[in-house]
Image (cartoon, rainbow, N blue to C red; front, side, top):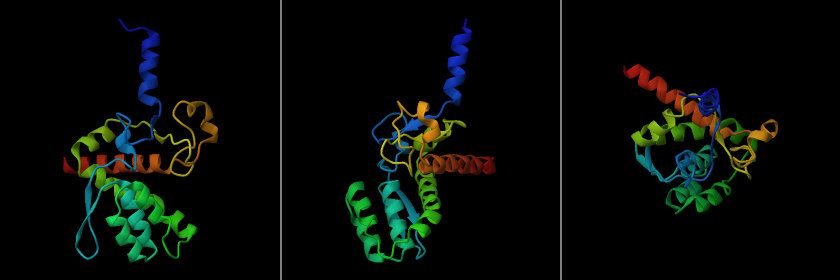
Length: 183
């Protein structure tokens, strides 16, 4: 027989945020932009482009947004997220206001592809129910909250923007809606 304490713990488990950060952490490391899961996009020319990570997708589309085909090509050929991110920081004619207006859409679109093309990842995302998804990066207050998972609950009023967590919740909603339309 379950106790009231057990019931309260279960209720907390299904309503408390899901914290994620590093791509190697289980079970939610796949929510990281750095998680290696190749996915494809068909570009405007009709060519299929493969991305190794959602981070690569974001940096590539950052270069495309600012009309920098040379950096975009280098990002596609770069090995690993660190090199891709470094190249993304070299995009010519970068404008912070334009980036701020487009970054969440770009990350959402990339993650729609990532999670739509892989049944296991899609299932992991959908199994989060309606729980809040939170990137618990202690060093990133834009894509994450600026706190690690251990300290995050007590610092909620000071959290950063959590743009990645918000984008993933939009992806989850989008995938659910697509699945409903197929029924």
